[in-house]
Length: 233
Image 1 (tube, helix red, strand yellow):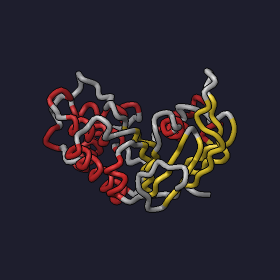
Image 2 (cartoon, helix red, strand yellow):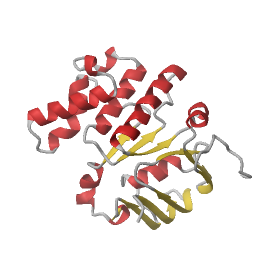
Image 3 (cartoon, helix red, strand yellow):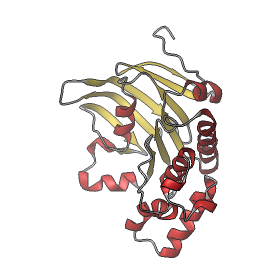
């Protein structure tokens, strides 16, 4: 079995909106995958299925051999400890320092303070922010705030990192910095990266696997793709 297997998945929301229709995908450990498509195409729904924010109505979603749709609610936290998520809107806690924001997820794991310190320093070093440890979010640029989010997502060295429009609010220079950091993590940690994005420039430049969704349907899946939104691809 591949690291991620999505088999004949349908997702319809309670308001009747069909978000995904018969989606099947296989993603290997260590892959770097872009998911593209217009707003409402099903990108975010697909990523939410992977960390059990949503469950499919039909079909199955396996991550690391676990059928995540069948997980009991009380066991979802175990899955999420193995997954890092990076959001577009940062979701940093404004009254906590950079160090405290990155340490926050680890504090419920029963680790010692010295273990937490070591992991946080390593994560901040990976995103080139070791010198901002004592700063607060409002003292950072948008790009720096997003790098803190990435540090928080990788602090437990997860096997899977899901990025939902991580460069959506950033200028091209900051976007490039973020993508350089994410690519380094993909290479150094061997984490599988799945990124939903509208950023044509980044997708075209990086030449990674590109999955294109339209109206909840898988239109194309290319190994070294570009940002194409055309039913004939």
